[in-house]
Each structure stands twice: as C-alpha cells, then as structure tokens.
Image (cartoon, rainbow, N blue to C red; front, side, top):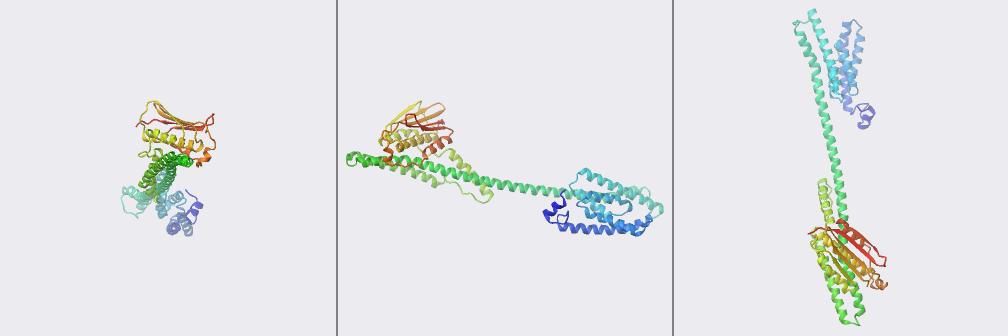
Length: 439
C-alpha cells in the first residue's frame, strides 16, 4: 500500500486519503459509528455493572477506529470482532469487512478475518438468544436458535464481503484497462515517431538517389560535350570538316542528355520518385511508414524501366573514342542478359569511370574489361597515365567528387563489391563485381 506522504503528494488529499471527498466520507462514517458504539456502550455498562461514562467512552473510541479503515482495514475488522460480545460496532463491522474485501490484501487474510467475524457473530447471537429464551424475553423454540444465529452471522458478514470483492475486482479491472490504454497510446506514439524517422530516412535516400541519377546522366554527356567543344574551338579554322563533325557530335550528345533528363523528370512528376509528406495523426504516420518502406525498396532496386543496358556499352565507348580517347574493350565469358538493375548499374559504373578519365586523364589510353561469370558480372576500367598532364586544366572540366561515391552506392545496393584507386604505373583503376541476377 502507498504511504500517506506518497498519496498526499500524488492527489493532494489529507494524510492517507486520496481525495478530500474520501476523507469527508470516512469522517462522517466514523462519527456515526462513534455515536452508535457510545449508545450501545451505555447498555453494555449497565449489563456489566460498570459506570455509564466508562461504557460510553469505550464505545466512542471503538467507533472512531473506523476512521482508519482505508489505511489499516485489518485493525478495524479486528476491533469490530473484539467488541462484538458487547453487542456494539455493527456499522464498523459492516464497513470494515467491505473495505477489507475491496483492498489489495491477499485473499487468505480476507477469508480468515471474514471467518473470524462470522464465528464471533454466530457465537454472540447464539449466546444472547439462548439467554433471552431462558429469561423468557424470547418466545422461540430451542431448535430455532442455531438457524437464527447462522442467518444473523451470514447477514452481517456475507453482503459486505461480496460487495467489497466485486468493487475491488472492478477497480483492478479498470486500472488494468487504463494501463493498457496508456500503453497502447505510448506504442502508437512510438510507432508514429519511428514512421516519421523512416519517412525522413526515405526522403534522404530518395534525394541521394535522384542526385546520383542526375550526376550519371549529366556528367558524362556534358563532359564529352565540353571535350568536343574544346576540340571544335581548336580545329574550327584549320579543319572545317572536322569542326562540323564535332559540332554534330555535341548536338547529338546534348539531345541525348535532354532525352534522359526528360525521362527522369517524367518519373519524378508521376510520383514514383516522390516520398509522401508525413501527416500528424498516428494512422497517417503509419501510412508514411509504408511509403518509406516502398521508397527504401526503390533505393535498393533502382528504377530501370527506362535505364541503359549492357547492349549500349559499345555505343558508350564509341562516344568516348569520338572525343579522342583511345579505349580498348575486352569481353570475357558468355554474353547473356541480366536483371535490369544489374545491367543499369554495370553500365553506369563504366560510364562514370570513362567520365573520370575525361576529367582527370584526358588523352590517356583506357582499358575496359567486362567478365561474364557463372554467379557474377565483373567490370574494370583502367587508364594509363595521361600523355599531357595539363590537358585537364585546358579542358576546364569541373569535378564534384561524387562520382566514385555514387558508383560505390550503386554496387553496394545490389550486394556487390567496389574498389577504386591509383595504379603503380600512375593511372587509375575502377573495379566492380556484382552478383549476377539473370533476367
């Protein structure tokens, strides 16, 4: 049971009472019980040959113990049992048994005290009835006395005990339901917070994916366009025919870049690349969690309905060769089709590696190797040292430093391995191995 200080702090009631209303009720019941016991104590003092004030004071103090029924219900019941032979404390016994049965005490204690109260009431009633019959005050048969004693004892003990058990069980049930409701509310709030976190994570991942796609689409095409534009500027007066050819290549690459950008923007506008904004309610946030999971799955498996494939690899290398790069392509193993996301990732790795060669090693010879293995597809792009170290500065190709990171993210999303770094000869090597998911 809680201490009086805890209850007072929690609810503001005086002493051990939870509310002032409970305190007023108990004070009223104790006053009525004290008056009842004082009146009955007067009769008890006459029967016992004691002074009347002694019996009244005894009954007054005995009745006031009902004031402690919420704090010490066992003591109240024991006092009521003790004063039962004096035929006083009936209200105290009824209220005490009710409070005892409604408390959180073990059932064996409640049963033992209720049994003691029943036995005490039975004995007192039996003795008083027998004495009354002997004196002639009661005109009943002797065999009726046990029945009268049992009925009186049951009437004074069973109703308050049963009512107290019912009220106590109902109170515990309500507290359990309240705790479950609070627990459910906390769980819903936790789910809402997690859903909001998942939605925020999905939005960040989606922004990263869109940035990676934009980088792959724009960087390669624009890098080649810059290279061709520089070549066009250099040969415009010396070789008009070559200048016209370079200008046509720049136009073709620009149109290809615009086409891919339109396709990507079309996907974004259709809603495939947009993550829903989280709502405030728990139900809406749960829906956001589903949207976040869907977005996460799209991050793990990029949309490849309009993406490039390995069949376009020769065209990609041809564009770099047209820009003046010497590219050597070698293919090992049996050529076969893979899942769209695998082919798109392999294509983007080669594309970005060639873009980096244009940016950082213009004019360097590059070797592209593609290996079709039983359980994986491997690719490697390695360039030799650039023949003219100042070529990159002359071309003025900017670098954001996101190319290698984007390649690593793409390969890692499919469970592959990505390695990049300089070679001993002074060049640069990009290698990737992706598990083969056959289409």
